[in-house]
Length: 181
Ligand SMILES: C[S@@+](CC[C@H](N)C(=O)[O-])C[C@H]1O[C@@H](n2cnc3c(N)ncnc32)[C@H](O)[C@@H]1O
Image (cartoon, rainbow, N blue to C red; front, side, top):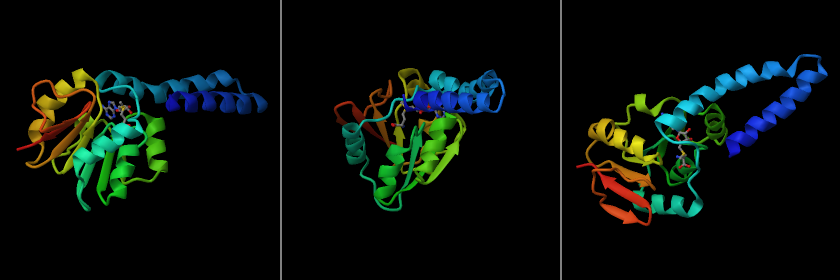
């Protein structure tokens, strides 16, 4: 939602400014389309942007039991809200995001290392805690390709869509905690 509001803002303000200096505002469309391509890929390969609400965020933090100094990742970090909360608990945080607008927003909020990067290509084998909020098809793929490479003791905290074949160690409503043995 926020992403689309920013887009509309860019189009309106940019279009007006361009008209004012006598440049055809249609030229705005091309860079915007180019910026949107990775978001479309993220939508298909992971999930569209849907921020974790505050009550779910608190449940995720409770299940994560983050200790100061631990390394916490968010695969598709959106505006970085989970990482910000983890950083407040003393964690070292790292996020991956493919939407340019959300990446910039997360960076603006200044929480840890935010990468404009496809999380399918990220090495998160060092993480103590991983947050995931992706759609079921992606959860299946994460279970097959990312889960096997996680370090022993890693806690994976999942919002809404559980892993299809793994048994959670703990559950709180639609939040699931998995522990890598
Ligand atoms: C449901 S939102 C969750 C956002 C955030 N983790 C939260 O809980 O508020 C999913 C996010 O993952 C991002 N995403 C999806 N696929 C991705 C990929 N392959 N690499 C990086 N980010 C991705 C989307 O752009 C979106 O921001």
